[in-house]
Image (cartoon, rainbow, N blue to C red; front, side):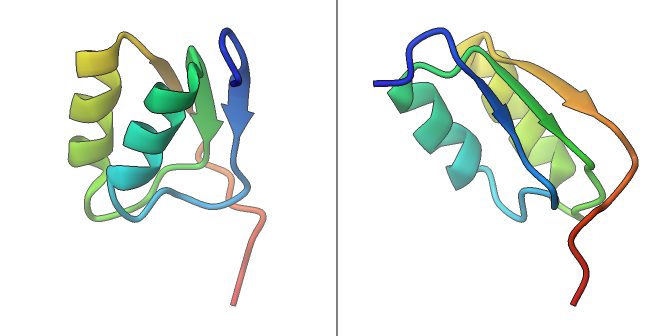
Length: 63
């Protein structure tokens, strides 16, 4: 398990399922660029699980 860890992403989370999986693993904070049209769903999921979420506004992954 990843209890107490921080998850960092170089691209946004397109769906809340990534946040849900992180919560199940014990992640306590997520840092990511944001920018998904579904950011609000990810934020709501993080709030439900008591996960701190930080948006950097800087995307490092590009297609």
